Each structure stands twice: as C-alpha cells, then as structure tokens.
Length: 69
Length: 186
Image 1 (cartoon, each protein chain N blue to C red):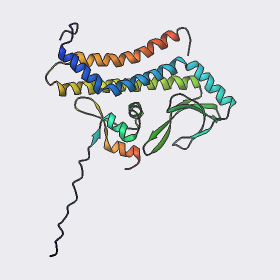
Image 2 (image 1 turned 135 degrees about the vertical axis):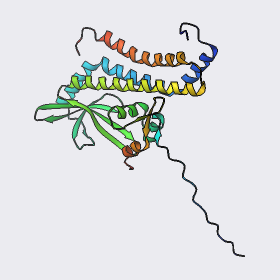
Image 3 (image 1 turned 60 degrees about the vertical axis):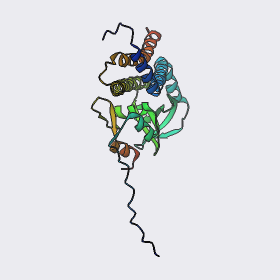
Image 4 (image 1 turned 135 degrees about the horizontal axis):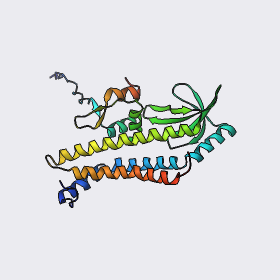
C-alpha cells in the first residue's frame, strides 16, 4: 500500500526579537561590552530604552552594523 | 530605609546575587578603567612617543573604512592606536579603532587633530563618557534585576552599593591621575 506523504509544514520560525541587551549585542557582534557602549556613544548604534531605563539595541541596528540588512 | 543601619540578611543575599549576576560587567568595567588610567597617567610620554614615531619611523599603513590612509605610530589599547598622516597643514594625528566584528574588522577614526596631546586628551575624555554611559546603564539593569527578583521590596541599598563599586573604579582612576599630574600641564 502506498503511503500518502503528509503535508509537512515548515517548523515555525523562532520569534525574532526586536531588541537585545548590551550583553547580547556584544555576543552577536563579537566584541566586549565597552565596544558596544562606545558604538552607542559614537552614534554608530542607536539604542532604545526599556521601560525601566536600561539600554537595548534594536535588531535593525545590529543588522545594519553587521552589513546583513 | 535607613541606609546607616546594618543591611538585612535579605539585602546581603540580594547583594551577593547581584555581584554574581553582574560580575562580568564589573570585571570588564574595572579593566577598562585601569586601561584609561594608564593612558591618562602616561599622556605626556605617549604624546612624545607618538610624535617621535611619526617623525622618525615609517609605520605600517592603516586604511580606515572611509578609505583614508594613516601610518601606525603606537598602540594605545588592544583595539586603539595612534596614527598619523601628512597633510598640507602638517602632521595630522588620529586615534584609530580596529574593531574585530564578527562580520569583519571595522577601522574607524575616533578623533583626529594636528596636536597629538589634544588628540589624546579628547580620546580620554570620550572614554570617560563611555564609562559613564556604561555605569548608568548597569545601574538601570541592576535595579530591574532586583525589582524582578524581589518585587515590592526596597533594595535601594543594594543598587547603591553596586553603583558605589563602579563609581569607585572610575574615581580611583581620576584620583590617581590628578595626584600624579599635579603641577604638570598635560
């Protein structure tokens, strides 16, 4: 008997986050924390702030810097 | 809360947890304060060495991302160096940063000018601004961390004690710099 191939739905993509913490941004860029803060201070990365005040780096900013956008 | 009272057991536990959670920040912060301290305390010597190198030895060529070519004089930190180039107005110095991003190395001029001492002073001032930005951000992160772990409890003393640690790292640098440079115009 022939088996009917089931319609395999692609696995859902993990939700892409809109912004990352400084630590995560440093990991993604491959640099230390100081370099991320320096990139922010020099306007090379434009951060946003979480409700309680900590800095976050938008995903779009990271992609722009990594040249993948 | 009376900050002059001995911290409670819970505050001490929260402080220990905070120290562990933000140990990497604190270690990197202190290391960067020390590096800045070293540059500030040797600013005059570094300026002289950079000038000598620019006049005497042809350094390797460093091309920045904007296409400009500079000649390497000396390293300031593991990521930054003093470079120079010859212009119609004389020697121009720059602090160039080589940032090893995962996608490739970025080479940027952080600041430049014809007076190498001024270039170094602007660089150290900017580094202090970065440290200040870092300190404020970690304070916000620590507050958030404690609010999540200890909701509806005043952990102000723990935030303050962590902030003091970071401020101390910077002020140690500044106090040393001021005492060592007393009477010496840099």
